[in-house]
Amino acid sequence: MASKSDIMTTADGNLSRPKEDSGALVKEQLGSPESLKISSLKNEQEKRPLHGLKLASHDVLERAQLTGRLKCPKCSGSRMFYCYTCFSLVGVAQQEIPTIKLPVKIDIIKHPNETDGKSTAVHAKLIAPDDVTIYTYPCIPEYESEKHNVVLVFPGPGSITIEEMSEQLLKRTVCPLKEPCPKRQKVDKDSKETQSAESEQSTPLQRVIFIDSTWNQTNKIITDERLQALLQVELKTRKTCFWRHQKGSPDTYLATIEAIYYFLKDYHVQCLSQQYQGEYDNLLFFYSYLHQLINKAKHSAGKL
Image 1 (cartoon, rainbow, N blue to C red):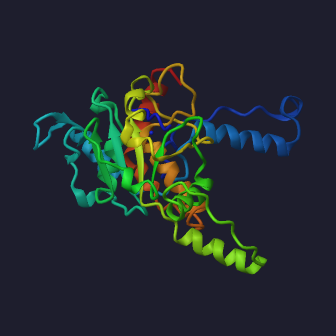
Image 2: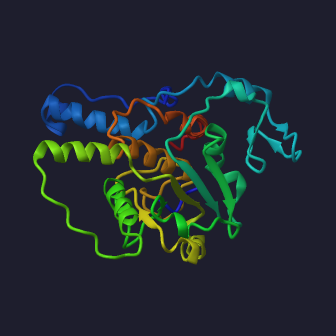
Image 3: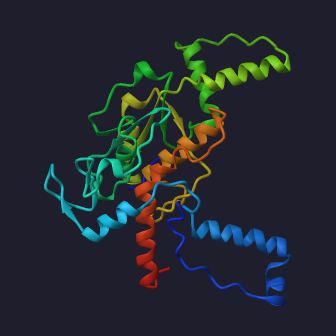
C-alpha cells in the first residue's frame, strides 16, 4: 500500500514498445538524432521503471502462479505466494526466494485500518526477515533514547535529505542535550577528506522507521509523541510505479517497499560512499513480478 513516506530482471521486458516514426518526420518533430536518443531513453525508463534490476529468477513465482491459491498453514486464509497476515510464504519454499542482509534495521509502523492485502510491507519482511520488523499502531517501541541513531522517513517542513542525515545524527551524538556544538578546527584538505571518509564509514544510523498507511490515515501516527524527537528524512526525487497509487496524490508518494528500497540505495551511495551494484534490488522481488502481471493484464484489457 502506498506509504506516507513517502512506502528488474527485466520483469517488464515483454511490454510492447511504441512504433517509431521514420525519416524526415522524426527530425521535424524531435530534432537531432541525439535528442531523439535521449527522448527515447527517457520514455523507455518511464514505461519500464523496474527495468535493469538485478533480481533472482521469478521461475518459482511463475510455478506457484500456475498452482493457484493455497491455504496459509497458519491462518488458513487463501493466499498466493505469501500470507500478508502471517508474514509467511505460501506454496513457495524459503530456500527458493532470495534473502538479503540490510545495513540497518527497518521498523515498519502499520496503521490498524490499513488493508493487509494491499500493503507491500510484507515484501520487506519476507526478503530481509532478520532486519525488518512490522508493528501495528499504537503498539510501537519507545525511540526517545535512540534519537541519535534512528530516523523516520516521512515528508514535512522539517525533513532533511539522506545526504544531510549522517551529519545531523552525529551532531545529536556529540550534543545530545541540544547544547551548542563546539566549532570545528580548520584542517587541511587531505585531513578533511580522511575525516569525511571515516565519518561516512562510521555513520551512526542503526534503525529506519517507515509508516505503512494511506495518506489520510497517517496524521495520528506521525503526531504520536514517541516519534516527535526523531529526525525526519524525505525522499524527494523518486517516483512511484505502484499500481494502487492513491488518486489525487503526487507520483512522489511511494509504496512502502519502494520507499525502503530507494532509501537503502541512496544510503549505500551517499552515506556509505560505496558504488551501488544491486545489493538491495531483491527487495523488489515480489513487487516487480506483481507489477509485471498487473501491467500485462492492463495491456490485454486495452488499459495501457
